[in-house]
Length: 576
Image (cartoon, rainbow, N blue to C red; front, top):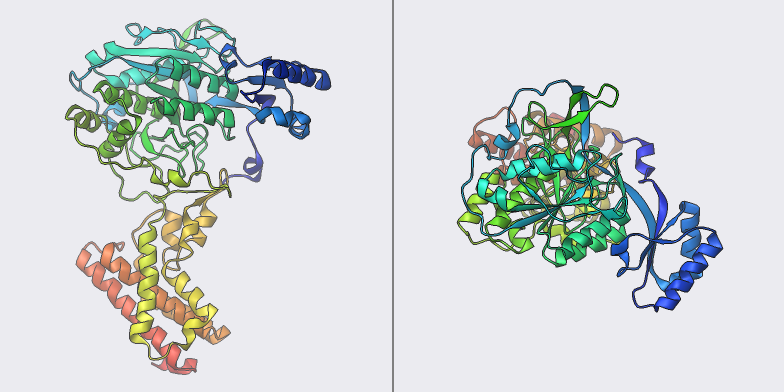
């Protein structure tokens, strides 16, 4: 469970972004920069040489200065003012090892890429790795590093002083795993994270635009943070508009939603799998997670070679995280691009169509499913017709003013509506009197018994625990399923005996006749829809027996509701 401190904790920042309007004259821009410098006794500087066209300037400051700037006369000359958040590399390092573990390429086996795919490449592919930089270490010596830039130090790219970006690039190329495609890959190193693995959203945004303007086909961002950044979102939209595939890590906080920038609409958000194919314990999940890929590097060759500064000996550090998962998806995207798929949506569709679907994923751990490189390449190589479908069709609802997102994989609204309709049809078909149908308590009972307040089940508030919404969005009988994250019904909970005891107690103690009638009818609707569409009951392995079990219990619930609605005294109910 997330602590109250985490709920209110935002990404830290020590500088502020001022984005001046592009239509203001140069003289007015200079006057306003000078005025801000004078009024607040500080220095206003251009973020980088690649920020000139966007008029993005940076000023050191905290929340107090941010609020003062937003209230000042500066507002008429700007598009926005926002914090310059500090994002981090999304990797987890475990203890140092003197030697690597056994050579087990579980990650390649997991995505069905433990053998060469074949010769399919038709064009060169440029991958921009927006990270700590990339060095030509073992495994990358044959790769061409094209001209990049160091946005941390504002100079031509030099080297990776952290190692994270280099490791991400190695995983990307390990995933490509095809000699012809490998030779056509170009890596564009864009350094936005410092030696500590931290970097500014203004630098990341500049790097995204640089990549888009300099021929990048794919952008990998194995980095992120908890706070939304307008400058970064604008840059991502710009790159997407120029046909760049953008892939980012979902985050390593085990939160029920993706981090930024993976959270943005036009970014493929990647969660991490462990060696068993389950969600890695650290991986974010839920809203805006699009696909999953290997991220846990246990028993693999995913080690970072480093120098112990005290002894100067070579040591190995195990690296894992959604950073690695995003790198795998980037490698497969490169293989798809190499088959001459130029449109971003084509790459999206192949990833969707080729992914291994997960039947039970109520918390949306995996998005559209597990990454399957072999199938993706087969689809790309065969030039199969791709159905037009959105990667996350609920993206159309992304910009909701209330600040919540709905995960389409969390709730199947259609079946919930069926349950409500079935419940009310039972009333109309089987009951002689309908006087109770207009009471609030009856309708509340029907809703809680059949569908629950189901739309709440898919509501996500960023950084808030999602379990309260799942409980409120669950019906009487699927509370346990919501907590356990399964769709298989518990035979003891769906049994008529539980409904009978519940009804007898509440009618006797509180006289909630209409409510109890409603909840039993709702339960009957719930059971009948399950019996029709997904009759899965724990411990009953025959579908026909499960279906019969659910129908019988639904009948008894209808009978119980009928008796309560037509008899005033509880004694009659108990005797019969």
